[in-house]
Image 1 (tube, chains in turn cyan, purple):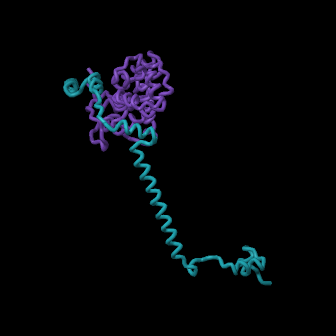
Image 2 (tube, rainbow over the protein chains, first blue to last red):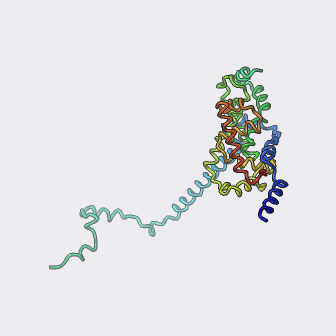
Image 3 (cartoon, rainbow over the protein chains, first blue to last red):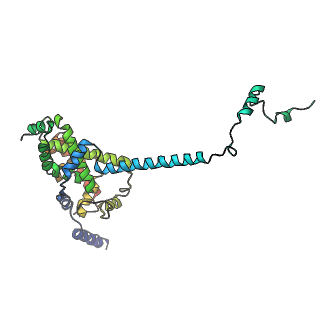
Length: 121
Length: 185
């Protein structure tokens, strides 16, 4: 039964599948070379500038995208500067800095909780 | 014109001689490119690249090999370089499974402008793409381009016996990879 089935599969293969050499012959079939009247111009353009037509578009797109990103970033920064409010923005007060410097108090000594750690006698 | 005269004319910037050379050899370069790449755009791009290289390198052409041998050599080198670049940048699971990979590679739903090739031809293309570069090149030059073993060996800069061995291995490997696709008596 199995032998019969195997034989039948082989027969099917023979009908459906090509031989290896036939497969190679199919592969050997000539490739059509399309006519391109602009081919020489394309080559000459690449001799002048080594970038191909295809990549020229990609490079131009990349430059435009980079410029757009820069513009957006510059716009955001400009917007921030325009909305800047000195009352709500924490900045160091130069007057306070001067007092601390005059008293020669370091950051460590100016710790406000230090007094709580001192045990009274 | 002899190859040396062609070289001297192109070296001197003779556009007409270069144009004639492009007209004469474009089909050869495109045909070889089409054995490595399945899209027209890739083949066209590679063909342009080869002629740019010819324009630049012709002063170094010594004239000891036939002009066609020299052009075949440039074409094969450019094609293999592009194949390497593609492999580096594009990870493809095309051949993750032997049969599935070959079926997919031979599939017709390509998003790009594919070359018109039969199913059998596509199967061999896909299997060839998995062979080592040297075996693939030897097979293409002798089987598709019809070069003699001596000519192909000259293009590849190897001995004839090495070429013979490469061809034998290429056929054995192709048979192995395509075993499900052809009838074996």
